[in-house]
Figure (cartoon, one colour):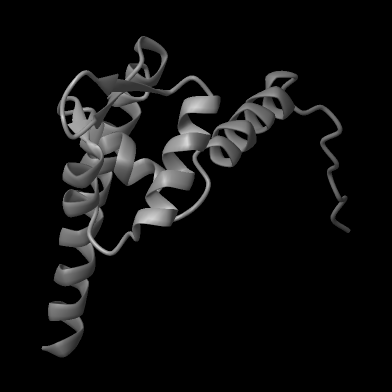
Length: 125
């Protein structure tokens, strides 16, 4: 007769790691925040430039997302002394700490895309 083995001990760091991942996902939640941060990781952008680069986002949504990113210390907003007034957005030094994560996500996404297309081609043959 087989005995069931119960493992009561979980690594003590697991709950804190999962909590940290959950916190990160809450901060970057939604369709647009990661894309906005990705655009700003290539340099400072004006509002209209961001709206053009983040395909499909409306001005109200972009404004809301930028405001949330600013509140969380990831993005800075600078009103330029120009006529008409322009506003420039940039990643803060804290926001720049997300760059390696975004690059890894991009690499993983490219690999995943290749795998999916490869799997689809294999299943069609």
